[in-house]
Image 1 (cartoon, one colour):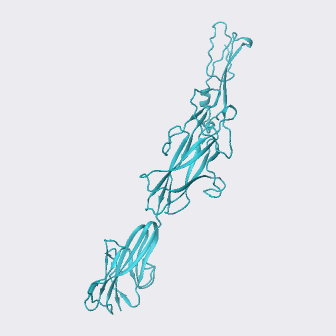
Image 2 (spheres, one colour):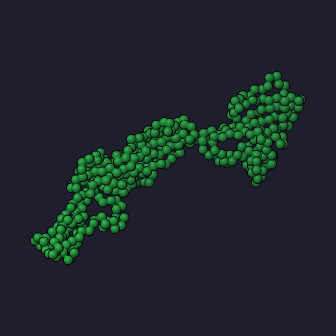
Image 3 (cartoon, rainbow, N blue to C red):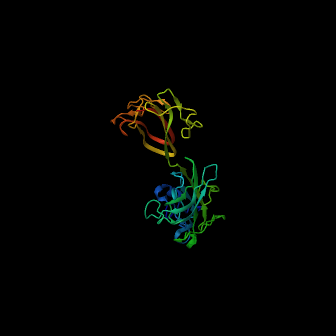
Length: 401
């Protein structure tokens, strides 16, 4: 008995008589051979429209002319539509900012070149606190990395080959006013397009123009034609379902209000040499930034030589963001003398020395903080690096010379 394998097959349904058999072929499985091939050979998958023909050959003394019989099973590879949109990033933005760029990536996992339409959608409240405005979607041209308004002008992905990716920018304006940490979430959806009008129903390129909407083949598989099957997963956008030729991902804009600072200095108390002591200003509503300054009714306190004045300085940072190396200085003028031990910060007594409490009366400039900033004969408070919103206040007393 002899064996001769000439091509691959799935089966060989011949019955061989026991006494007159000269030889026969035992068919090899195509799938066993494919399983042994390197995985890298399937990086993009077998291209849609590829013709695959498997033939079994039988040689025997009953096989007719030439002692040989063959059987062939041909088919073409169908189109598997699959894609993903990559997102999940956050971009910090300032209220009122324009042309803020959020980046996505669209990858073609199909087994042919495809076009992709693009759409951006806002997430409805209460999932976020504001909607980004005037959003446009643009495809990276490759001319200059990063969004370039003059170069990245395509609004759909054109002729993206299998297993390739395209960078897509959602470019939006940010409304104002906003609270710090308010967010806006946007979904980018990509939908596969293509004209399968080539020979045998394969993909036909349409450079510069988007392809047609795709329809999944509903009929039974036709081994001689390219059927279309959707294989994408569901995405984040409303209505983006499993196997719909669309995928979506979500990015976030987070408002970071620009920090603004304010400084206020007032006299809160006067003490004269005649025994009069009167409060001059009072704080309203328990805040540190709203005051009503009213001279005490009927006060006879005089601002003369020897009178002691109590000052209050308020620092307020509003909005959001970091402010670095903050130093507050208040020089004592030549006509006054600082009252030792009178410095407080947020109502807590501080030493006059340049030490770790970040507040001092600096009679001279030294290398030790906080007296390494400002001028001699200065009250200095150095909160350093802060994050808005925040506020602090300090008080001290000075005598009129």
